[in-house]
Image (cartoon, rainbow, N blue to C red; front, side, top):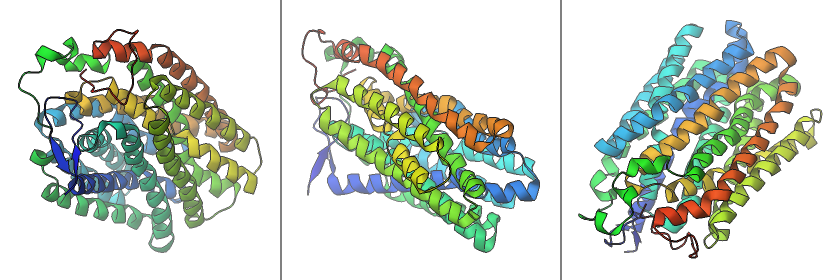
Length: 442
């Protein structure tokens, strides 16, 4: 049987995990992430129906979407810290149960206020799933796969968004919008029951050496400090959040855009939106793989790629929304979204490399906090309010410009990345540093 060495960042223990079991853990955790985003993004597919039935403004619709991201941003850190301490597997199963039941509450909502409360609880349930889930995944695979794993895992959010919008739109067209939420809920409940029966904490938790303080940096003594102890990791949090302002906003509002400017019915708008989001998910994986392949011996190149992804997406999406509705515009939107979320893999790898392994769940929670508070929460809401004033097409023309700010912050991170890695390794900056050789004894 083939084995993976666990990425516990400790060179004193040859802990191994069966390769087959590692991929089973990935598949189930990935499946729950898909459920997470299906429950979150199904709302976007039924925006036109809710707007018509309850006479809602774009600002109110944006708030229904943004409240989930806001709760994820506010609660991801404390809940991830609790999961790191009390058990990641048990925590993931409880989270999935909560967001699935809350999604069922969306199906039963009788007015805007009840829907808002249900969406609030969806956000509470989803708050720490992404950060704790990726911590579980990287714990059973080799370190050199981190960017690929981070991007592939988080691409589950894109695929969940695809399924949520496509299936949600199709179900709403046939059975009504309430059944769209109910269907997402049942899928999540099934996985929430299955997950802890197969994934066991004792099989995935890395074995830690009894005495590591004698041969590691001072950061090990206080691993939480590594969450914010370097300028490059703080800049990575900020830049990642700013870039997701763009990708997250387009995903939320593209079904409504297609409905208004292409006269597409709900099911067709959901289907076309699913294709656009699918491009984003595929690009996330491809960009993560590219990062791992090109950057194993050159840490700074990872940040350079992130800068390129920001600038490229800004150019393509700005060009797209400068055009009128048509095939060329849709093609450019797809290309822009292909690289708009390409920073996810490099950011995940950078955060993992710059923080202590024992707090990786909390580290990714900090990244999630930035992603939501700077990008996913304010993006849809601000764009909705701007849309109420100048129209959705004009609002979309402004959104890609946020990528310029993200690129600037990534450039700041690049200036300090090599130095911070060397310092946290306890090495001299003058010594060559290779991410392929980093044992992450931080």
